[in-house]
Length: 176
Image 1: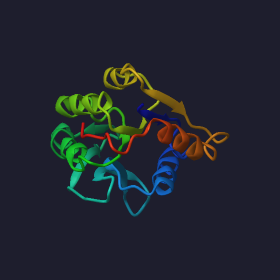
Image 2: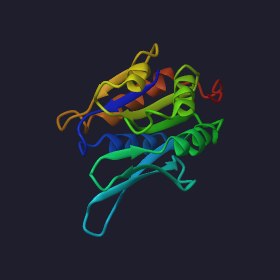
Image 3: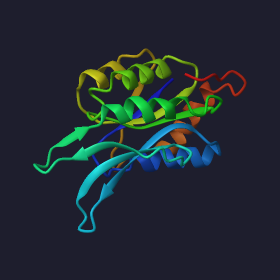
């Protein structure tokens, strides 16, 4: 059962995921994204890293001078797909975060959907709005989206750990 957390920026979605991974004591496959800021505190780019800390040097999003954002489909289709395939025996696959920047990254989108239909447990974050790709993720059978807010975020790690352990079979995990 893939689980995706959604909610406002800064509410603690990625922190919930970090707590789950730490409690399970596993090295996950998949990816995480990190924002890049100027010295003045302005967000200017988004980079993608392996969930295990590997840095493929993938800038997946860039803030343009007019303040809008542009995704980098080549980075998603190259490094993003590679990160999803990098740890084929990992018992947990992270996807932190799916949003609008991968809208033109069709190879990446296909890989994400393939992973969601596979046997590896997926834990991720997605933007809380409707876009064709995000709606396709939500429509995969078994996907559960959990809205994170200030009231439920502290209890979510234990709840998610229980869900994972209930559905987890350590001896029957394959790559996506």
